[in-house]
View 1 (tube, rainbow, N blue to C red):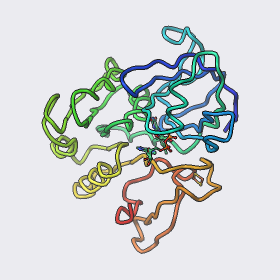
View 2: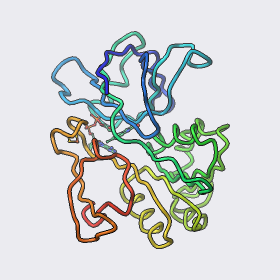
View 3: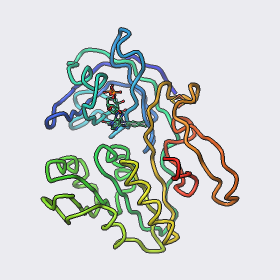
Length: 264
Ligand SMILES: Cc1cc2nc3c(=O)[nH]c(=O)nc-3n(C[C@H](O)[C@H](O)[C@H](O)COP(=O)(O)OP(=O)(O)OC[C@H]3O[C@@H](n4cnc5c(N)ncnc54)[C@H](O)[C@@H]3O)c2cc1C
Ligand code: FES
């Protein structure tokens, strides 16, 4: 883990409220599923860093000609992300990271399915880049959010979309797509809203399919100190063995069988 002062390489607006942020960082040893904590302000407001997944590493070629470092994708939801959206290239931000455990690699012969919705798509990008195969199931409210899939084109994935209003792909929830795809030889990686993760976990458990979920909780420290991001877990082999784990330092990726979904 490093604490670095990073220069903003770009902070491009993609659509209303969505931004792509390039940050300089010389040697980020980032794995798929890692995240970083960003200090978006030098002052006291907001005091706490904000957590963001890493979309990809940027290097010395192509788009990366703008610099070497990491690229993030974020949605403006409040004070911190609002401040971030006003930042300009050349300004600096504090990064703490890489943090968390990242996704485990699939076993040989396993068929990879990634399930996501909204900004949950971010940590799956680096996994898709590294694996170069698999099926991506993307759920959105409407066609408007499907621009988030642009980064996944050309990565060798089969992409299927479900929208709640039917304006793109199948009409309905992404879990309906998953139910059709699941087979015993699959491994599922999921990140997105908690309701979606619960449903994905339930489906996978019913089919006996291994599933890894990347959880999001409010995070104050990001390093296992404040205990603010605790989730109740169950050792799935000895069902009664309940325990609390920190999403930031024990996760954010967990075997879905180890999460006590009743409390989330
Ligand atoms: C491990 C991890 C990785 C993340 N990766 C990304 C990412 O790649 N891109 C991205 O855009 N966001 C990501 N997030 C969410 C991001 O951290 C929050 O959106 C951000 O901290 C909000 O800060 P704020 O000051 O703008 O909003 P706040 O003022 O803190 O909150 C404003 C409103 O947004 C709500 N809010 C806070 N967090 C979230 C959330 N996670 N989802 C939806 N609503 C929320 C609050 O409940 C509140 O109503 C990630 C979160 C975690 C824990
Ligand atoms: S955010 Fe502080 S312990 Fe996880």
